[in-house]
Amino acid sequence: MKDGPGGVQIIDKRALAVGLGAFAIIVALACIWRLSTSSETAGRLKEFEFTVAEPVAEKFELRDPMRDIIREMPEEIPKDALVEEMPDIHVAAAPAEFAVTEAFVRSENVEIEIPEIEIEASDVDIDGPEEIVRRAEAVTYAVDVIAAKVPEPPDLFVVEDPRPREKPLLHAIDQAPQTRRVLRALPQAFGDPDASSMGKLGPAELDLSGTGEFFRIMTQFGGAKARAAVDAALAWLALHQEPDGIWSAERYEGQKGAEPAVTGLALLALMGGGHTVRKGEYRRNVLRGLEALLRLQDADGAIDKNLYSHAIGTIALCEAYGRARDERVGLAARKAIAYCERGVNPDGGWRYTANCGISDMSVTGWVIMALKTARLAQIRFDDAIYSQALSYVDSVTDRGASRDSNGVVSYQFASGQSYPSNDRPAMTAAGMMVRQFSGVGVRSSILLKGAELTMRIPPDWRNKDFYLWYYATYAMHNMGGEYRVWWNRRIRDVLLANQRQGGDEAGSWDPKGDRWAAAPGRVYTTALGALCLEVYYRYSEALTSFGVAPDLDDLFLQE
Image 1: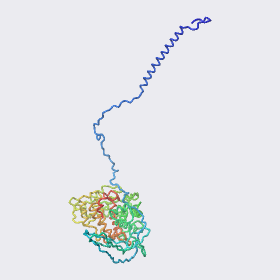
Image 2 (image 1 turned 30 degrees about the horizontal axis):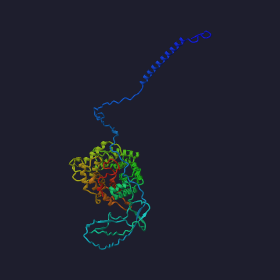
Image 3 (image 1 turned 90 degrees about the vertical axis):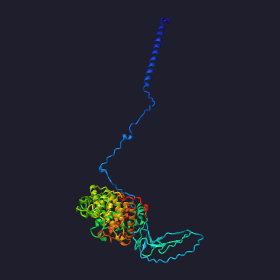
Image 4 (image 1 turned 45 degrees about the vertical axis):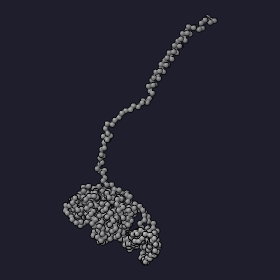
């Protein structure tokens, strides 16, 4: 640069060139550094990027079958948790309660004159040949006499001066050419059943109205008449219970001392009809009866020192506890079962007195039923007692119940003897029922032989034996098939035809003439009669629960 006016140099070109060159070098170095650092950063960031790799297929082969890997191991259940039989307390076959809003009441001392029936018929011209048919006999049964409808249910279902059962009123047999017009003549002697009667009203007819499972079961298997008979029998028992809950044998054609036994049987009949301490029309009667048995029981568990009566009372306590859990009843039932255990004889059975040394089949049968009922109610006892009792039953069976046995069960004899005649048929039936309780199959030869023996003595009112009928009814019912139908129809007809229909005894069965009813009286025969008719729904065939509905086999063989 040139000097200025003052002689001072303003710009030095050389210095300027050096400065610019240095600046350019610095800028270039900065750019190079920047580019280098950016490349390194990009390389480092790339290491953190995620990518999805392509799947690689791998081959897998199961060398051993799955069942070799997962082996089935049985689970061990503790012995205390095993329950062989579970009661089915709430059942479909329980009676249904329904209200009766009206009933027909017949009048007393109605005199009816039946006029002659005149039938007029005109001639029928037959142009051509007609098919000749034979019409079956048509029977019209007698209808009710003049009655009055009352808007309330009757207190007791009875019939005064009943007609013979199924008495035919009109027979009509027609064997002639069948015409298009059929002449029918209906007698009007009995008038309109809905018409009002004159005079004082008498006892009421049985009202079969109502629905429900109980009515359906009885209609299908026992018939409406059997259902009515059970109702009437239970009504009689309920009305003739003493204020303290006991049923008296002495007051009703029996003898004093049989009260524990007949009370137990009456309770079984009521409970068999579906009445417990918690439900049913007669629940108060059941409760009072159980309270009476609890008062009779001693501290050692005995309801009665007579083991015959004690066993029946024990069955009632166990069944009551099984159907409706009440710990007071359960405690009494356990004490009663314990008394049975302590009273067993060395031969494995029981007799009227505990530990008397020798047994009989009659008392043993009732005690075994008590033990079975305790099992159903889940009351524990020594299983060895039950096994020994079954051995005793074999010991009083013909030839020790061997293959060549004729099936006869004796009252009291030594093991292995031969009993050619069935002189105590009730014992044979009791032996059948005990074996069925124990799980013996109905196709067992000993049971089949017993059933054949029982069929030789069909129910006959002239030779009444309610003790035999009770055991035989349950044993034959459990056999099923032909045996069930054959026996049940006959016992049902005998009981229905001979049940008292009027007066204070309406609904009961007469004890006179029964060889075993002298001491227990009318309560005994009525309770056993009701139990026979309740066989359709009191126990199941497998005898594993209380009150289950019956199976449907043989349904179409019923009348």
